[in-house]
Length: 261
Ligand code: FPP
Picture (cartoon, rainbow, N blue to C red):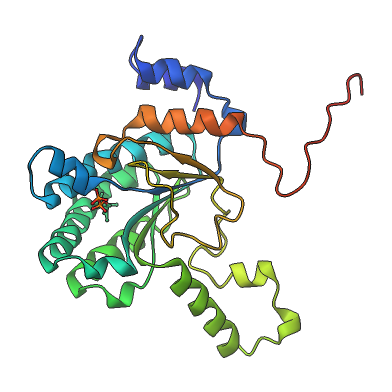
């Protein structure tokens, strides 16, 4: 994003503008992953049914997708439905599936206009046929896009993904000596994508909830008390600014700065 773009996007004097001005565009996280949590609590605080929290969460999804693409994030992954979420009441599951369908139908033109490539990670074959159809259309129509990659984790489980990858390795007849971390990573849903640099979780919970277990090995974690339906561009910018202050060592040590060389 150029500085001029930045100024047209964030209104003068706004919190977003102040935060965006502090961003170091040379050190953006390449992949941002988000555990969207707190929809139920958001609804309960307003004496509304839980599903209203999910409905309100769609506005946050739009804002975060748009902002991430604008500032130049390469990959955004949102955790929308886990393999464990089928345990929720059938009406809640069905509203969530309906919201996903609706989101894709309404946002597809926007994703295309912004060159965003949409992909589902998770067990798509277990989803209802009408949802699968919408996902297939979204993935096919955006497959040629070259801008931000937008993954929705749907019917996703980190352990299930690892077990599936192990099964694929066996089915492909790989010998133990042929299997290393790179090769194994290529058997995951996120094959070919960089690992998340920044993992954001809303609503204050300190857990990773079976999300991208392999891929978040070295992710920086940022947790906010903000509930997902209230999450907006400014929170994303705050998370990225905090990320930019972190010293990422990947198990090594910080190299001392040698002055004058
Ligand atoms: C967690 O809140 C949220 C979810 C399980 C679903 C998130 C889904 C959406 C925001 C809508 C669809 C998404 C896309 C990408 C179009 P919770 O219900 O567990 O909240 P609680 O912990 O407060 O009960």
